[in-house]
Image 1 (cartoon, rainbow, N blue to C red):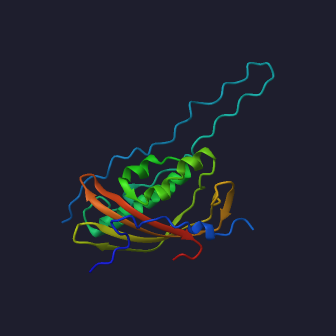
Image 2: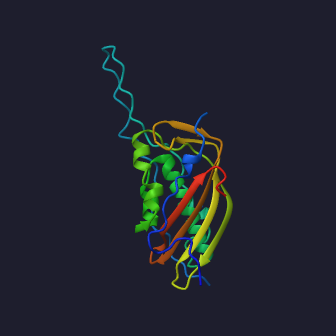
Image 3: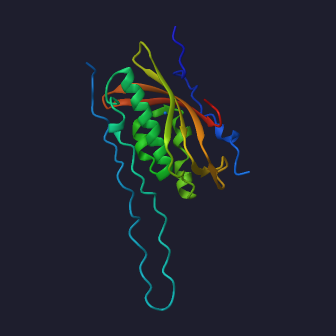
Length: 214
């Protein structure tokens, strides 16, 4: 009997491992990946109008989302294949897109990869609008894979376990009140994926982060 990392019932719950961090003191059948709009951020409507010469300072331009290139699907070869390896690559891509969304504030792309009723997805990516409004988006950092594995089940679902680390970056503290600097941060994630007409869809997510969670 298979033991699932994530049950089909509601067992994938975000574990806020960040609270443990010290603050400053992720012949095959193929289908094209879903059409996800990860274009360059809007310019916010242009720069502020110049002064009319009366000596007053021009208004400061509104903050824009960082212009960070999105993850390239070509770096996740096979993510559009209906295979165990394809599920693994699709989940790694989802994690990369989710990290990118935390850096840019653009949360539509990861949402497009999730099932509408994804169990646990909102717990990971649901904070992005708040981070965007508070100017507390993550800074850029590299993702380093530690370990990955995949389990396949008779009903066609796959579960991917993906352990990875983010390099040096800044991010909000766990109360989202100020920015903190971290040398690195470890993540341990598990995703449940199902094959659909649009390719792999994330149906469940469990993720924990903090120091030494691997």
